[in-house]
Image 1 (cartoon, helix red, strand yellow):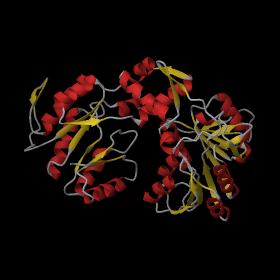
Image 2 (cartoon, one colour):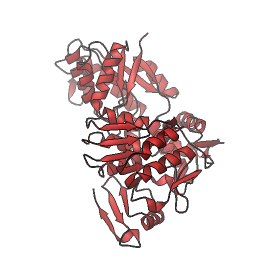
Image 3 (tube, helix red, strand yellow):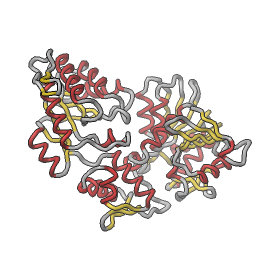
Image 4 (cartoon, one colour):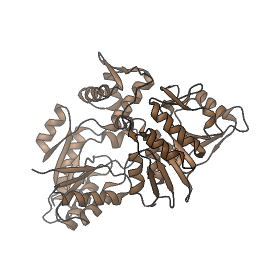
Length: 449
């Protein structure tokens, strides 16, 4: 039986190559990579290195789509890799739900997918396709071979798999689409299945399946014909995986903006959380950092980066959100001093301040804050008006807030009343609000990135 492994192509790319070599040594037959050029690094560049570093394993995207690249380009890429490395590629392909949706576009149709599969396989194997210019083939392809596996759900798509594909990829819940679905429910307070079907351009079956996943994680409550936002308590603590599918774009923008505050040769601390995890990916190249964190996931990202930082992991008891907390963590932190502490939180409220759903995590965050010269809060707009079980800081203990463009004008003004610097991270650059000289956040805004 063939057994494959799939890699998400987050930086650094060298790590994906190393894991591919290890996978081959362990007997894996296939190494797949995600393919969404905005969300992750370009897969075919990395696949060239993966193939060059191995001698047997088969490599391919999981999954590509007809829209990101012209199918003739995709065919030429596979033909080139096969010519270089001896027919060791495979093409996983689907409609492009994530890759297209992140650009505000609808996935391709099944008819477009059908045409693309024919084009890619025919050209990559040396055959000819019919175009307005007549028959076209890639002249340098000889003895090419390319299996195409199709990701599908729903009766029409599964029927296409049976007619056209060499293999079937069982496509389960897509974390990006889950994130969009959850965000839509949050903003509206509830949503109908028919709305999401139209909004996302996917089948009724897909929407119901994804709602089932979100309901199972306690993020929504299913009702007849749709879903509503789950009623939250102050002790609700979703796991890391559940939180990592939320507000992906916002967290990425916040991570990039916060990374610009990091200087080489400094001592910094990062709390546990999915936003600080996003930040870690953007500072892993910064040289000569000493970094203290109570997150195994953050430490893993930093240790794999090219910056060669000194990473100190606090130890402690792990929470559902993958934070290490408790007396062991607190004791390690209290003897240390940091130039900057980057902290996430469960909720933000003008009266309650920064809160967590876990008493021990609050105490660990307090220890971090006591040792920091500068406290930077990294929090997206959904954290506002949420109050967890335990407060660990007042708003005026925060020196800099890095948030996203979804924060309302009212909440932005409240933040600027209490926090010296507020940085709003966006696609067109960061906007900074300085409350030191102004009573109104809107009076003193400057674009900084």
